[in-house]
Amino acid sequence: MENRSQETGASKAPAEARLKLAATAMASNMKLHATKNGGEKGSTTTVDQETAKKIIEQWPATSKMAAQNTMDFYGPPNEATPSKLIWYKNGPWKRTIAYRDEVPHDFPEPHTDVLEQFIDYHVPADKVGLVAQLEGSIVIDRTKGEVSVHCDNEGANTLSLNMMHEIVTGKRTPQEAREFIAKEIVEYIMGRPAPYAEKFQFELPQGEQWDTDETIVHDVALDQALSKVKQTLGLDKN
Image: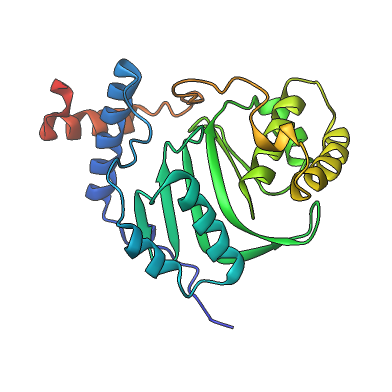
């Protein structure tokens, strides 16, 4: 087993650099709150189709099929690395990532997770635990205001997010949602009508769904130090 140090780069960051970054980030925070013009911009350029195909050529079978299916439906990705392809704003999705590396997943039937897809969506803090009971592939980022899910196909991802919404809105319990997924995914895989796997059954939120929380650090010395750094960097003029 690889022996990796528990020490991170944070321990080596000079005090001056820490203050500079904190001051810059604070100024950016204020600007984003004022303009609401933030969040993920992604990329509008696309990767050459042949380049993308060459990248996935040696990927495992499931990963390759998931990536190819996504390209067939949405076109070439916006970004590509040896281990992943990324699409922005493809269809109803905020972002889609096809991964080379597989993760085993046994719910609702054995498969590997290789396709992650994101939507803008706010999950209230008191609902996060309920959503977690649905399945482990749903990832909630309350600060960004987005939810992602990863599976081996887009239908399963759509189905899981539809069930997530019904749990958040109180229409189903986590157990009821799990039982529905078990039935609906069979219909989808067998090529029969499966509306919950084929389209979103709720209106997707528009725009940023940030949950920026609240400030709890109130330290006079820190405030003075940050103010001084912002003045030095000219950030107090923004």
